[in-house]
Image (cartoon, rainbow, N blue to C red; front, side, top):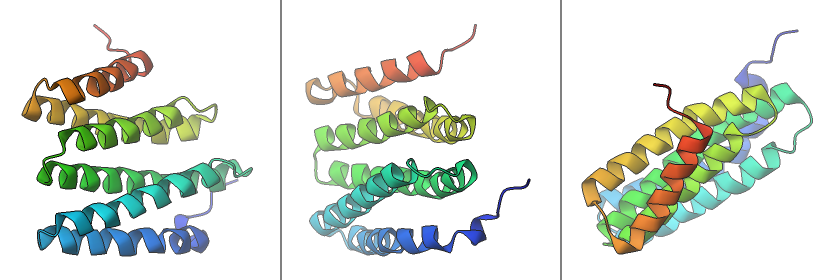
Length: 165
């Protein structure tokens, strides 16, 4: 039995429409250097993607669940990375670190799911969020506010994604 194409799930696209509107509004505000408005729009988009992911994880049909998560996971990552960039513009490195570690933890949770397809989605996106965390740590170095958050997230990644020598 083959899985339905993503286009067979128009309700997922409908559910993500408010996310897309908030991301676009956030992008517009960001480009206009309206940092607080961008932060607010990206926060709403991130929270929406978080709620949708939680709902999609409860779907009983594995194929539908995986297709929905395959669309929702990158939405969450995009919203979080945009929000973190906005926090940086606002001079709030702690907020940026918190956002990056939070989205990374969410992707690691998917990576530890019992369904191998969900695990695969989590693996793809946790590798991306890990790279963003490493980039953030490299750019901003050790900072008492962010060091503990980043160290915990990086340690969690190495536990779920061991390096082979």
